[in-house]
Image (cartoon, rainbow, N blue to C red; front, side, top):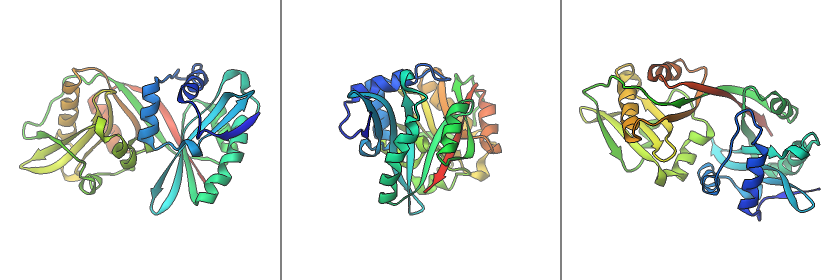
Amino acid sequence: MEIKSLENVNLKDLLDVINLSFSDYIVPFSLTLEQLQSKINAEGIKLDLSIGVYAEDKLVGFMLHALNTTNTEFIAYNAATGVIPDYRGKGLVGKMYDVLVPKLEKLGVKQMVLEVIEGNHPAIRVYEKMGYTIHRKLDCFRGSVPALDINPKVVIKSLLVPEWDLFKSFWDIEPSWQNDVMSISNSIASSQILGAYINDALIGYAIYNPTSRKINQVAVSPEYRRKGIGTSLCNHISNAVDQNELLVYNIQNSSVEAKGFIKNLNIPYTISQFEMKRNL
């Protein structure tokens, strides 16, 4: 077997291995080539820092990684890890980490982050052996939004660019990697940004992808919460996607505000993930 970077990988070959690796997952999962390319672009995946396992020149396992800077420190994000069924139980994930970690340390990476489904106990045990610990629990929701009572005083407008300094002042929690500023900025061309206004003051916003119907961020200024601002934003999004189901991923489980908001929307819960971290 050979373990090397995926810098020169054929994306179709990588796609086939990803889909085979996740075909028997707790939540079966597959991508199209276009979706894989979008994931690479949005999440900042660097194929030269992603690792593959080859058996007789055939890709049988992979780890995709991205980099970001937070508080002046380099952080690496494991965007996906998989091994095809016939090659499991051979310690390949650990062997890929043996190749990856020295590369990250050389770059000055201080922390590694990943997400794993709560019930995936074998994967959690593997990551714990690799030095990861659970940082927080993230809940995922998917479904149609029923007719909502909106605030008639709220005016919803489309924005051309995110006003990040103001938006961040509305935050109580840090978004997960897939919903953070870098990922949204990387995919801003396919996103819609909505601002909620009362008396010409921007007091809430939402960012979503109209094609995937995924809501990346919704936040409201603290002094305007529980006044139907977030509900008005989500009602606007629901109408924009013709009342089709919406996806809201990685809501921090410990956030009373966020969970209360989602509960009021009546979007069905689907599954939870653990965000795990490892310091280098």
